[in-house]
Image (cartoon, rainbow, N blue to C red; front, top):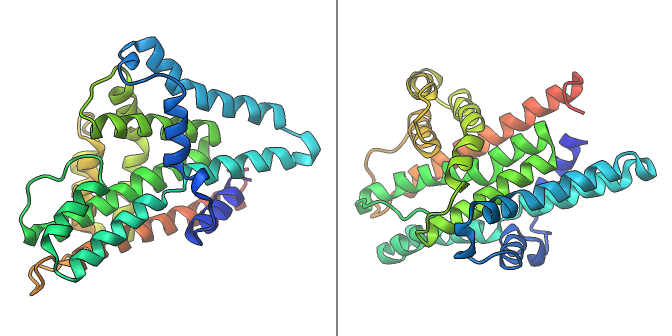
Length: 282
């Protein structure tokens, strides 16, 4: 069921068949606005309640629907949760807008849109470095919004995947507004610790293995290394990056790293298929 649900959800998302009301940002925005405002979330108890409510509801529904009507309702829950968690058309549209601006050599628009793509403000880079940095951002966002969610969804179910996405949603919201609130940052680091190392190792398998593996080994066993740093560093050496181009913004380096991220997701699906065939996943 896990693999089937994931494949159906990714197909629907890829074909842009998911309604705007079911996009993650819309659902999470409504969820957040109906609970507590940012000032109230200074309370650790309110923050904990906000983080735990949605995954607890999903876990309760999954338990109640188990075996009901031959599992139809259980499957429907997996599909509905998956549709919400993997729907990020705004993110796709923003990245496409950046690529279009870069292709027409509109530097001002490229830098402006690049700041909108990632909740963390873009570090000071030159126009020559922008393409490479946005390629790293593409690999990071592919991990944070798709690969990590897919790992939790397939291995631990929709409730844990929901927990990851809720924590990520609050984390990104606080990053955009430069707010510090209890629990979120530490929990985000904890939830990222294992999947980011698996995905970064997948970059090595999907790209230049020997170079990427040496970087992965130098970083993966350091408890304090950030998830973003690990993805940035491994992705950069796993793929061939053009050194110099005539264009003001090098789009090819961005596209190369985006292709690497897509190959990694394909590798993840293949591994999930094999685990399903051999009965490890249900």
